[in-house]
Structures are given as C-alpha cells and as structure tokens.
Length: 250
Image 1 (cartoon, rainbow, N blue to C red):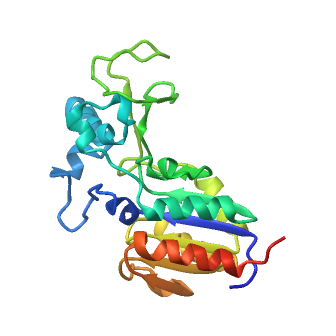
Image 2: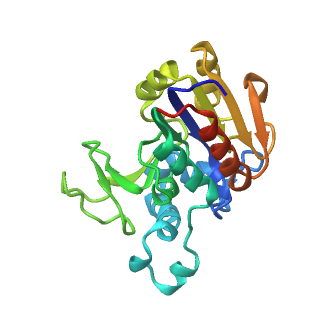
C-alpha cells in the first residue's frame, strides 16, 4: 500500500458483536427483545422513562470495571476482542494522523487501548441533562427520581445516546477528518445506517483509498477499493500488521 499520512476508521456493531454485545437487527425491529420504538426514540423516553432507563441501565452494567460489579454482573462482563486491540495497535504505531469513529455506544475501544475516538451515536457510560445539554460520566444506574447535578430537577437525566430521529454527534469533525484522510477503513458495518453508510462516498470524493473489513459484503460494498471478509477479531490483526509493515519508517 502507498505511503499513508492520515487514517479514518469507522466501526459498527459487528466489532462489538464479537465481544458478546447483541446488535439491533433491523429485519425484526427488536433490540434485546424490545421494540426500538419503545426504547430508542425521544418519544419513548417521554412516554415511559422508567422502561428506557431500565433498558440502558442493563446495557451499562456489563461494561463497568470489575471492581464495581456484583458477581452476577461480573459473569456477564463484556471484554474487548482482538479487533479492538488491533485498532489500538494501529493508532499507537501508525506514524500519522489517526481518528477512530464508532457507531457503537459501548466503551470497548477505550478498554482495548484506543484514544482518539468519536462516538457518533453517543455513549452508554454517559448521561445528559435535558435542559442544559451538559454531559456527565455515568457509572451507575440512572433512576427516574434522580436529581440532576446542574439543574436540580428530577427526570431530567437521559442516557447520552443518539436515538432514532436525532442527529448523530461530531458530524463536522468527522466530515473534516474524512475530507483530509488518504485511507478510510470501515469495519463491522452493515451499510444500511446513514449518515455513516455515506462516509465511504465522502472518502472517495476526497481521493482516499477505501477498505471494507466485514463479516460479509455491506450494502455499500461496491464503493470500496478493497475488501477483506471474515471475523474482525481474526482478519483485522493480520491486516493491521501487514499495513504497518507496508509503511515507510521515518
């Protein structure tokens, strides 16, 4: 591969699925046995905040550090897989600009060692005040009756998640990074969720090399210059090692 100076990596649900996190399946409209309309929309939160908070509390617990988990949660704890660790290695050893954009709301990239990350769909380990939009770390369950630190109101804290019908986060920063990159790598994405599915077209317009690394062809596979298919935890570490060897050393 030609000398690369700037990389943008996009990751999707497939990379987290290999660590045991269940993904939303658009074909049946269910996420962890809940209708998406009941747990992943602003309207759902207004209608039944108790159910929505309970749903995300359950998503949050397995991601917390072992010291804060009870035995039941410890047995369910989710760990980074080799794909997460390979991306951390790529960031650490690549001699250029690197940005990891993830659609995932978990913290497995952080646990795996990645640092320069944008969570475009939010983070389950954060909460946000509905009134002020202030964002706080969240390492415990959120209860409907909890008082917000910044406004003092109950039922004003919501999961810091981009729900259906809401605008993804960091779009300006992501667009700028893609417009200036010369390698765009998409990992574990279906290609049916926009605007992320359109990032490869943005990269192509910028003249970047584009690579899809996925379990199978995504819906936008034809837009990529190259493809590597297989489990991310198996094929990504190999690809990262080969890529790093291909780059000139300063």
